[in-house]
Image (tube, rainbow over all chains, first blue to last red; front, side, top):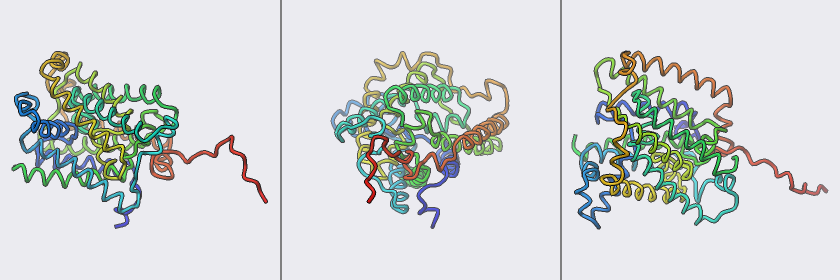
Amino acid sequence: MSALASRSWSPYVAGIVIGLLQIPAFLLMGTALGTSSSYVTISASIAQVFDPSIAEIKYAANHLTGAKNWWQVALIGGIVVGAFLSSRLSGTGRWGASPVWARAMGAHTPAQRYLMAFTGGFIMVLGARIADGCTSGHGVSGIAQLAIGSFVAVTAMFGAGIVAANLIYRRV
Amino acid sequence: MSVLAAMLLGLAMGIVFGFALEKGRVCEAGVIVCQMQMSRHAMLKMFLSAVITGLLVLAFLVGFGFAKLSPKATLFAADIIGGAILGIGIVVAGACPGTVLAQIGTGYKDAIFTFIGGLFGALAFTYAEPTLLKPILNAGSYGKLTLDQLLGVPFPALALGFAAVLAGLLIWLEKLQPWQEEIGPAGDGLPAEEPRRDAVPAPTA
C-alpha cells in the first residue's frame, strides 16, 4: 500500500510501468499505446449531433466506430481516474493552475491562463493529428518500434518545443 | 473483441497509465516546461524508460512471434510540420495529449481548458483534412518504414542494442542531476523558491 500512497515514484519505475502496457496493447488489441486519435473519436461523435454530415468525411468515419477507437477513448478516461486515485492516495491533489506559470510568465489572471491552455490544447492536438501521433503514439510507441516517421516526428516535436519554451517563457 | 470488452480493457489500462503518470510527476506542467527549457530532465527520464521497456517487450513479442509491429506510416512532411506544431502546443499548454488527462485527474482546472481546446483542434483537423491538408499529409510518403528494415538487421537485435544505448543515456542524465532534485520539494517540477534578494530581512528582536 505504501507504494500506492507515496508521493512519487522514480521516473524509471513510472516509465517501466507505462512501457509494460504495450504487452496488453499488442497482444489483446493488436495496436500500440496512443492517446491523440481519441480526440477525433470524441469530438466527431459530439459534432455528429449538430452536423450529421461529418460522418461522410472519411477521416471522421474511420474514427467514429470500432473497438480500437473506443478502446482508446476508455484509455484516456482511465488516465483521469488513475491520476485522481493516485493523487488522492498520496495527498498531492492540485487545484487552479501550476505555480510554474507565475514563474514563467509573471503576473497574469486565471482567465489569461485558461485562454492560453485552450489555445495550447488546440495547437497540440492539431499538430498531433497532422503528424498522426503524439508523445505516446509517436514517442513511447513509435520509437519502441523503430519507426522512421516517429523518429522524425519526435525530433521535430522536441526541437520546436525547446525553441518555443526558451523564446516564450522566462527561465524557470 | 467487442466494443464493450475493448472499453473495459482500455479503462483498466488507462487507470494504470494515469497512476504512473501521476506518480512519475509528468502530470506536472512544471516538469514539462523545465524539460523543454532543457534545465531538468524528469520527463525525458520517464519517457526513455517507457521507450526502453517497450523495446524490450517488443523484441521479445516480435522475436518469438507473439505479435506483429504496427508502426505508423512514414510521412516526412506531415511528421516534421505536425511534430513541430505539436511541440509548440505542448509548451503553450504545459501538457501532452495524454498527460493533460492526468492533470485533470489531479485537479488542475486549466487542464480542462487544454482538453476542450484539444477536442476543437481534432475537429478542425477533421474538417480541414480532405481539402486543405491532404497535399501536406501525403508529401514524402514512404509507407510503414522501420529502422531495422532500412538497415537489414533483425528487429529484436536492433531493439536490444538501441535499448542499451538509451539506458546509457539515462545513466548519464541521472549523473547530471538526480531525479529527486528534478521533481523538486513540492513534486511539481520546480526548484524551491529562492529567497528574494530585494527582500528586507525581518527585524530581529
